[in-house]
Image 1 (cartoon, one colour):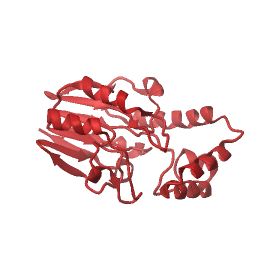
Image 2 (cartoon, rainbow, N blue to C red):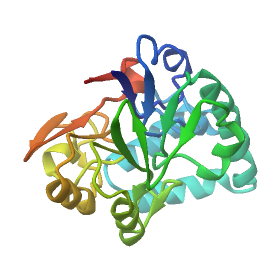
Image 3 (cartoon, rainbow, N blue to C red):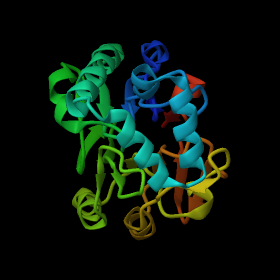
Amino acid sequence: MRVHVVSDVHGNSRDLAKAGDGAEALVCLGDLILFLDYADHSRGIFPDLFGEANADRIVELRTARRFDEARELSAKLWAGIDRRSATEAAVRKQYAELFAAFPAPTYATYGNVDMPPLWPEYAGPGITVLDGETVDIGGWRFGFVGGGLRTPMRTPYEIDDETYAAKIAALGEVDVLCSHIPPEVPELCYDTVARRFERGSPALLEAVRATQPRFHLFGHVHQPLHSRMRIGATECVNVGHFAATGTPWVLEW
């Protein structure tokens, strides 16, 4: 059995269309939307609306962890614009392209910058969306936990720790634990380019230690200090920043 796994697609529909080639299934761990590309500030919804110079400035503020100033700039730019409708229109355009690129079968969960209420409109036949749910793929049980935890960034699909932990608990024992964010392990949470720790989940770490799945697969941290680590019998793997690499991670058994 061969399964390809991607995460942090961030608008890369071109490579997504080829991501399932040679595999029996594709697994996607979320973050389909591209709001702002930290490597190329000309790409994404934010610069499309407000220009590259403002994108440069907001990246500078966020990277410096000056989140209050970043929010003030954002509020100033959005003044007089219907933020909800403008954002939804841009997201819908991206989702139409991205969901059309998914091969069948695809098993997907949400990232922290995704908008789950829109997914049912675009996830057609052959695309199974899972969050706090399990599915059998090739005789192995895969469990999926979508979204991220609350942060000062206030991205669209951040949830409280208790709700997130409840989704993990609902999975029970699985062969492959799939989430968007990593477990709360410093080496797996630190982004070497952004120079900050992203939020990992203590409940994911607890579940890995308690149930010892064969693999724990995740993304979210684009340039991790460590891309993989063994915790007991479990191989924890950051499957990579697909928007930049265009290459899926391969799982075979």
